[in-house]
Image (cartoon, rainbow, N blue to C red):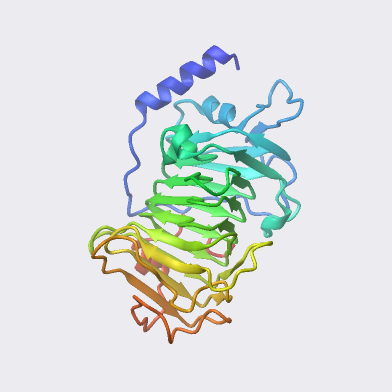
Length: 336
């Protein structure tokens, strides 16, 4: 597609698109599940960074732009490679983004990386600094690594998720400060690897992190949940996940499970393995006069002892999908 046509499609999409709004009854989706994904699943636009053919796109940004104002269920398949770009996905229909992988169930086998090194100051704001910003409803991303390599010293987001029914499967999300901006909406992260140091999972989403690895690469708090009131649906649920130190970070007790960005922040770690990277106090402060709901339930590991915890509410049961999202959870592949 010619560059002028792509530009016109981008402008039209930005004008026509409205902000994501919740929908309680989302229909079940047909998801392309397979143990390996080394070719186009069928009917997807293709992204090939090296010597793309006349029917392929050299960047994810150009493939997204080519979707234009369509509202049908679409997909994009990315061939192996490192793509240096900042991508905003703002498509009005359902969209699946698949990365090449010989084993879709293991994030460590991913062969597609989207990378940037922009800070929020350089880019203009947090959203704009993201290597990938999913801004809309009904998106999935499979087997793609996304990173912001700026490092310590400034807010530099790898992924922003703004919208409902956004799911990421076996993705790697790498950064330092403010790695994952789970900003708003109903969201699901399964078998993902998320790395950072300071408030590196933050925002106001109702997000489930299932069987993920949460890795600290510097001192700070894992979460900064921005729930602003008791009627706010925001909640971060870490279920059956591993809380540990990233390779090269050997300081014990230098990290906290979270701190309240919003005065009614809400976070639970349930049935997780928590290493001694976590400080014995567990939680720390941020927002003035905060009354957070910080909970733990049936965790194990050297950092799971709650006897010295501060600011913690005693949990009597684990959180369920229906408690987190309400309505149907058929939009997510809960078996992944």
